[in-house]
Image 1 (cartoon, rainbow, N blue to C red):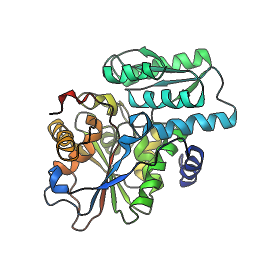
Image 2: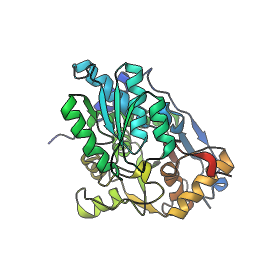
Image 3: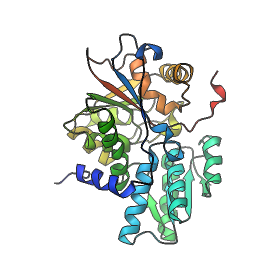
Length: 318
């Protein structure tokens, strides 16, 4: 059986979305400043938090919409998506650029800052249930009834291929990178980047202890449901790893490392204090793996960490 996602898919996505997304910068930083004792040197941060709509999700959203427009599956009925926040923001933004309406279903626990931003982008916001899974059920029913294009938050080939363009970009910016550390929720980013960098760099997935979707899937040999809770649930709150992500993780030996809530909070605060970067808790999880020592690079290992999103309320940062 051929894989659900290939390097060719990612390359095609790059050509399709070029001009619609930003080429985000990479910054070399002192690991000690972020509390990474004896950390990797050099050590880079991929500043994807500067992407349109505040997260990497814009890459997949544009690829999904533009691909559907090419095939004739995108109509004036528009698009429907379910999201804890970031995927919905990306779809709403992309829909506005492409010129179709967007309906975004979010759980009632979605941060107010994200809900307000969705409305500002012109999306119709529907709040349903307390988890991403509840919002997805609602969104699927709406799309089936209206005929709108459904955009999955993380488990569609076009979505994953779009996210993978980040990996191609990073490989050009840091051609000698050994390891890319990134946060995992449903796994779309991990799937795309692991596919893009296969044979070139290792990908390490980081998850909160309270939402171990990849960790549980690897242990069970297949995606399984996990409980969802904790401070990063708004962006990493998928109940189950995507099937495309599981296939990519197993094909590319992507490990899962788990981090505590305390480490996530500390990493987020350090990113603000030392780098003046405002990130959401899910994004900070990737740095937390190095701060807490959940992932310990080998001597001389060249590490890049993806800072994937900035859709957060900064008022709790000192």
